Amino acid sequence: MVKFKVKVERSGQYSGPGFGASFRRTAIVGDSAANSILSFRTDERIALGKVGYNSFMKRLSDARGADDQKMRRLGFKYQKEKFSRGLPGIRDLRFSGRMLGNVSLRSADANKVVIGMTSDELKKIARVHENRESWFQWSPRDEAAILAAAEKIFNTRIVKAVQDRFGLVRAA
Image (tube, rainbow, N blue to C red; front, side, top):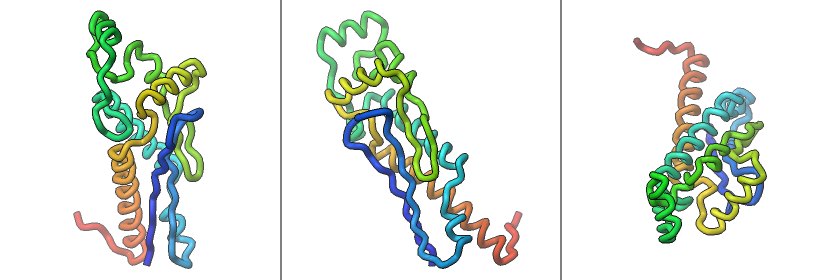
């Protein structure tokens, strides 16, 4: 019997170069083939990171924080300034567009994909916003999207492994 577990780690607060999804697997089998089935290839880790990134950016465009709830209202002056620039008067972190434009998939290694920023100036701005209201981490919906994509990868791989092992051919 093969069991696997994918865990998405959530950072408690923005504290550095980024946050990530850590993909851990557990195979209870004495078979090395099971371990290769349950390991993500680099392209799959990047794909999972992109799923998380897309979910993260969609959540922010909907003005939702790390708890998937609407972010707090803006102060009157800041809301008025955004309206004067033709922007929506909501906390969507898109005043200039520079900060969110700097968020990207930073790295993918054997067990982890990290989303972060490169600019030190924008990291400071992100930290101020994170201290005001939590946003720069995976939300429950982001995690669910990543886990659904991981499950799809595993299911596809397990079906293929069974077909290869037993010489089964998929019906057209």
